Image (cartoon, rainbow, N blue to C red; front, top):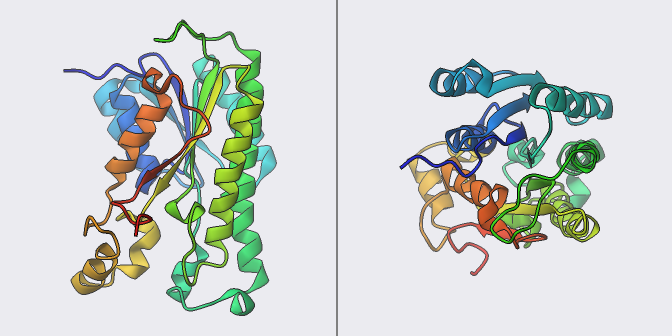
Length: 268
């Protein structure tokens, strides 16, 4: 049975060229959305989507989320291409700790690493939301959902389970992801009357390029998997499925939620 939950929606996805963003772009397209893939570098994700759904099903716009002007231009070009922005999913992010193998604590971490992390993982998300929200507020609401409400848009931010708990050796990434959870909750309150949903995803360790340095061999992968009671790493598709729920009318009364997808990691 064909999934049409996002039929006709225009979705902007930052960090769409690889990992979780790529999986979400594909999942949204399979559900009927037209996709604006934004990243600092292109990939085959556009070809994969358009070969399956047609040339007008996706477009690529280069964007560095550490640059405010590029984010503003991204949202303007996305709205021009699609006529509106219905969904924003913010996956662009970095984890500087991976180059140290979680060996550094706060007093040992270069300040520029902290600044870079906050610029991309926190400020970049905030600015992406800012300019997407401006567009959403200007456009007419969509047709009524299952609750009879006409929504203007949905934002799905990529936080992390480490936005809810701590981790030894994560002095930059953990604070940035806690900030994403906090801004998600605040924006959910601020834009509720405008019928704009704002939620975030909190994945556990997902087998993706971001944690590649931790997966040197089968033994290291098994060790990281064992930190989750489910005894496995997540897949990008696991996160994409959760994002699809939050981006659809299935989540008609869900806003301000930090959805955990972590194989029960933080329960431990």
